[in-house]
Image 1: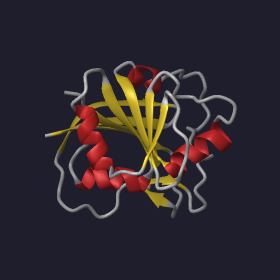
Image 2: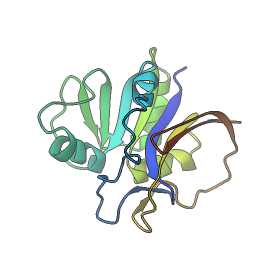
Image 3: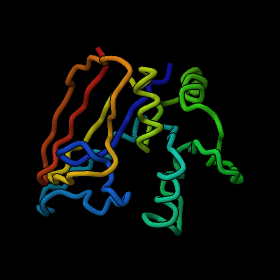
Image 4: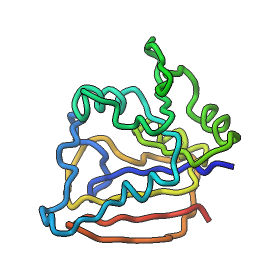
Length: 176
């Protein structure tokens, strides 16, 4: 069965975007000599990516407007907006938990939960995330979009791995 993995960065005080929704603060403290690429290692085990509309929109309008950066994966965008699906990007008006349950049953590699906060929160509340890959960025935003809000119940995790580079720290947790 496929595993569901959250791979995301957050500020030291727990935000995934500032109060305007911007993510231009997502970098370390500038030591480019530490060439660590956690993303490339992570995606070796992924064939599916799930995101909300705001994350999708930010990718195609700001981060990579010319080409779809997740073309190696089957992408699912959870949205109530009408949008034409393609061979590699599916726009669905469904509950994230229902989509994840369906996709977990298929053969293949694991599922990456890319963002945003509302999608992540529902999957956390339903305890559907198997692994949490969180990069802590050396920035305190003070306000913005929180990674985790009040959850319905406690979720116990086990720290599997840490890695520090360029002032950032990768934390990898699995459910206990």
